[in-house]
Length: 170
View 1 (cartoon, helix red, strand yellow):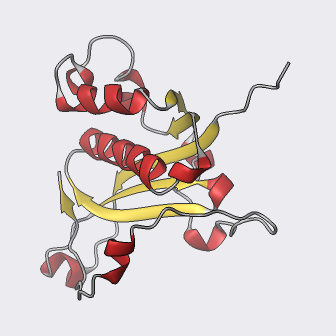
View 2 (cartoon, rainbow, N blue to C red):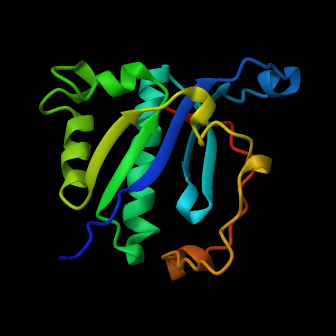
């Protein structure tokens, strides 16, 4: 009998940055931050964002799922465990909730991703949430571990200048 493969551990977080840099504020940069990490692959992603915390948490959750299904598609990931430090996000999956009500955009996205990935959600203390740690404290890919990211050749060939983005609006 083959041993069942453990789910890939992923971490998500969304928060409002309390530290205000006057230059960034005057320039219109968002104070919100969304972040996900996949420690087994040495991946951490962070982006500025505007919106309510719960909306931002769902945005980073679906960004994580999209990243796994597109950029890590060759890894054939079938099971993931997503850890969040936001109790509101965790409880959104239990019972009838506006964010995941039948027919909503979030429910449709979740149903679509659930067809190819078995998704589990769990709470984790903020201190243990790897999406909240400093990138300097984040280990690089373990020695000997190789990962082939799926890269769109057309995407690579685009020559475009992208100035600093002020964040995404949710």
